[in-house]
Image (cartoon, rainbow, N blue to C red):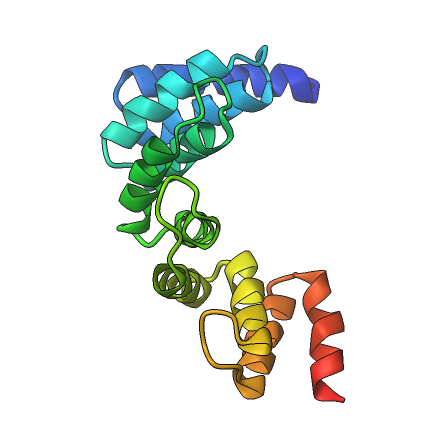
Length: 179
């Protein structure tokens, strides 16, 4: 029986073969293994190349991952405009994590003019599409009247969704609102 690191190494080899054959999912998975150093030595530069090829091929997860590299300056120069570019491409395919990051960038004014309207729009879309972080942040918006009029019922609704999605802090704030 092979140990986990050997199995991961074999998986990486299989992914590279599929990636070289044009499989966008395999490119993205190989990039993720390289970024995390799973089954192969960590190599963010190679990860970025796999992400970019899959992202340019229209693969949403790769677009999101590439956007994260630019957002955080991991293996590439931090570039908020490029991060937004890739997040928007992934968001067009309903990637809720990309939608959340777009909301956050508008909320903080990272690479774009801060915009309450756009931040709220993207938080709402990401929350509807299942982002636990967006569900929590949207609940906070309704609780505190940030970007929108305060609405206790909507805050409770979104805190419940966030709690059901595994956001532990949501339970505490939900309990405070329901008392």
